[in-house]
Length: 116
Length: 111
Image (cartoon, rainbow over all chains, first blue to last red):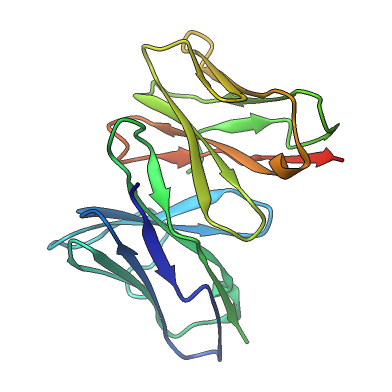
């Protein structure tokens, strides 16, 4: 089935530095990738939608310059958290339409970001 | 913004019992999906039910959809300790490109 590989799974960085999170579709082409953020014991909040070869679409309230999204190929989408602050600490998850008979999305395993 | 709202927020049952989780939403939808998330992990797609469907089964899972009430339920029968996880409903208004998640139900199944 459709698999999305996300890494790193955990990252600790210092305030002010940038962190890149990668999501790769392993056995299918993902023209669209969705990026979510999840706080502890809360639901997923859609941050942005990346489309291969075009600019990402950001949800209201999400800073485009802070959360840089690039979808340069049909199998790779990246989220870069720039000038990270402790309040950016969160769980970030990507997903792509799984297609096929079952429908639904396939999700990456998530990245736990801690900014110290 | 969130679309679906699950209840209960937390549910604790004994192994072997059935678990029922409900999801309500506000706008018309194309489909509704249920996902499972183990603590600190990604989500696993469980089942998708389209707006013209009323009930679907998958193994021990049974999902219903009532579009007139804008609600869905997920029933897990004969629960197991391994079913302990958070369960989320997600609604898609147009072809999955704007899926929104509910707050989730944290299910604990005691052995």
